[in-house]
Image (tube, rainbow, N blue to C red; front, side, top):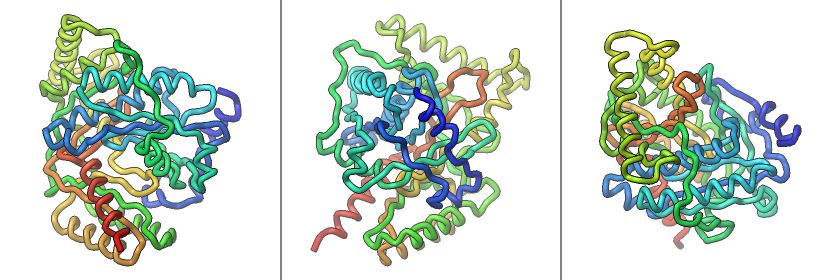
Amino acid sequence: MIAADDEFLTGLPVFRHFEDVADPAHYRALPPGWALAIADIIDSTSAIGTGRYKAVNMAGAAVISSISNSLGRHDLPFVFGGDGAAVAVPPDGLPVAGAALSNVQRWVKDDLSLAMRVALVPIEDIRKNGFDIRVARFQASEDVSYAMFSGGGNSWAEARMKEGQYTLPAAAAGGRPDLTGLSCRWNPIPATHGKVVSVIAVPGPSRDMPAFRQLVIDLVDLAEQDARHGHPVPEDGPKLGFVREGLGLEARAGAAYHDSWGKMRRSLRILGESFLVNLLGLTGLSLGRFNADRYRRSVASNTDFRKFDDGLKMTVDIDVTRLEKIRARLELGRLSGTCYFGLHEQDAALMTCIVPSPLSKDHMHFVDGADGGYAAAASRLKQQMLAASQP
């Protein structure tokens, strides 16, 4: 990566108060020559309807994992969308990122039995059409910051991909992405306040951005009205699970394992690691530099339960009173033309993780609703936008 691109990444503004997420002063435009690597699961709503939400989330996180591992860096801006993801890629990384996307698409088809679209969209084409990709970082914890995207470029690029533009072919049979560190070991996390609610709010037809920024501030404030700020993951971390589906998904993510016996060996290793971490947690003991309690607490602080991707996205654990206030504020925004929105309620959250190393502090954890989450909210958002466009 040339020096200018390194300077862009190291110079990105970092903010610590999430209510500032819609402030345009925090964002910087992608440099020339960059592109957006994007992917989504085709008909994810049907897959989720058959109970395959873990597989859908794993596929979305695989895009981030594969590109990061293939390029040998974990500092590229990305956003996890539940059934897909977007990663900003510098010019010298585009060939490798394209190959990684094609390999993920092949793996998702062969190992997860899902259909995925993948595309690389140049920033110049996005700008020619009146949109942009601007990036900031939110400091989720002392060790992890997540990228936030504004400018409408992600949404424009996703729409073009769904039309068949900029798409990449799947890799040849047997192609495998490097998914080192991709993990799906956690049990669903039940709501403690009432409901886990996935919310998506995007600018409405009025294009009144000051009003939209105020809407975001109001929604964040409503969600934060408890000691955990609506965080769906307990402060002492979630419970490690022995869920068969999650174990199988992680085993299939191992790039080096193609045959049934190889996957079985990997499954046994994952099961053994999970058992050991649970045992260390129960006993309070440490293994070398690894402390299970400290790790689980950092899991909670390193999650992306709220983000900005051309609009507000959050999956929060809230009571009925706050849910109704959030719904009323969203509806008020819709009626005024300030926003379109989608909202989906469920009883639990789900977490997928990227853990570069068990001893590293920069492990990242992607949170979605456990029964549709962002995909269901996005479907309702699209229905609302379609209804508004009818004469």
